[in-house]
Image (tube, rainbow, N blue to C red):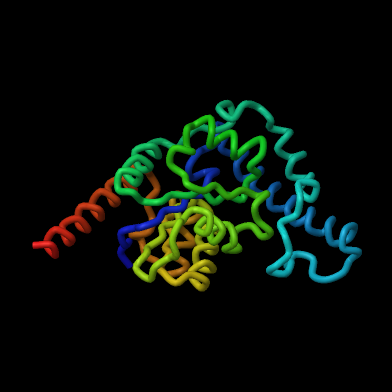
Length: 244
């Protein structure tokens, strides 16, 4: 199916908005982060909740756990506490896409499984991404990480100053299989269309598996820019024709 013109765009962070200067570390760190998140939930269940209730599925009204429950994540990130510019760099062409979206008044957010304090927040500040993103969601903000849709849903809740409309179209740009699965899960919760845009091979495989089609695979920001430019031009043409 062809990509529709977006009215809202959400970006993943690691591997999508920024890339690691040592790419092999990215997969290892993401695996460690995911494993640590599960371990911290088990720790909470055993020592704080006295092995009562579900381990990994807290109730919908349960508050987000305080920082002590993510001590494992902090320990992992301390292992790489170099200045973020020595760890990652913005993906090539990302600023062109961000500027184009900003020019067209498209609300943008960041939704990441990564830790914010000492990492994600530093990335946003160091590379000037706060100029573009109206909301940034990190591990501390959520109970359940992607592929659960919670990071996407929370990003939308914090980003928008209005209710979602049936006419809205949300793009989620990500590089991992779990990003595509999170979009599929979020689609069941939203009143509007949300579609994945695969920025890397891992996400591209998931896009094909889930039946979205090759139009949803754009593995460079040059390609994303060209598609957005075409969609915005077509949309403006339709509006002009309707006004006449």
